[in-house]
Image (tube, rainbow, N blue to C red; front, side):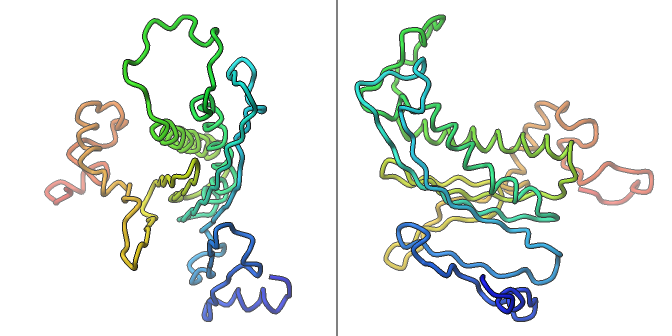
Length: 249
């Protein structure tokens, strides 16, 4: 958006025009992007998106973590969509910082991604057990994404205690690296792959509703996690005196 007229039109909650990048070559691989202003339910647009093109370089890794016969570069492309709710703070934070955490976690496994790379002898000191089965590169990348999601969730939790950050957000990330596509999600934002006009789901909802059975089992095994506020029987809230004789489950 370059003119005041364009900004004014896009801010119309009744018209809600679809906005697309003026330069379609900004995104790689003919990727498209479009957005529209919200329907007036909130003052700010709570949804965010991010794109990052990164490179994992062996020269950026500490010498004590990686030894290889030559310098390697592994490019990757990252797309992220963040559906905020009850506030924009979490979506903005995740859109600005999650890709950095993903990059850091990928750098942590770089010595497994680079051919003919070895870990210095000091890396094995103190280790008394080694897995008998080799861990695949795909599993390592999936683990890096999971670790990045975990770290992002904890950082948002810490920020909520320090700052006024309301609500939360879903996350849907697509990572293209080493010729493969990896999709990670939290919440109910969905990824779909279309081939020959046939849709294939690339993600599955990860919400309290979809996780209800697992959470109930976890609450039964470790009731201390419920903070004496709920039980594994799935009360929606703490029972009060006025609830006696009423159905709550």
